[in-house]
Length: 110
Image 1 (cartoon, rainbow, N blue to C red):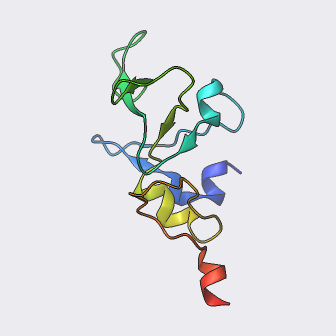
Image 2 (image 1 turned 90 degrees about the horizontal axis):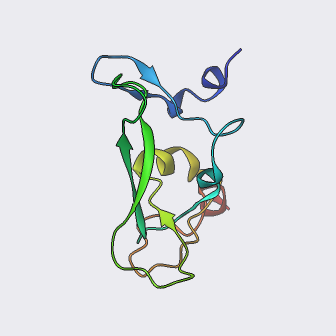
């Protein structure tokens, strides 16, 4: 059994109909611990350094504006993430621009 068998919503369909999932549970850099913000400080960009295979990009993070020293690096997890995860967790970015509910679905039902 694969992780995608348990979480099919994590799949992303590529232009060539290949389905891929970035799963940092077992592998990845320190970037896998980055927090979400509805007003992110960095944006992930696909880059190709060791291959030209469009299915196998690396991910680079680029600042969206000038950032002061010590500023938290955050990125927007995106609508697809929140459409699945908002049932169990809530956005706590505290941004005035927060786009996601402050309560989980379970909390709203009680």
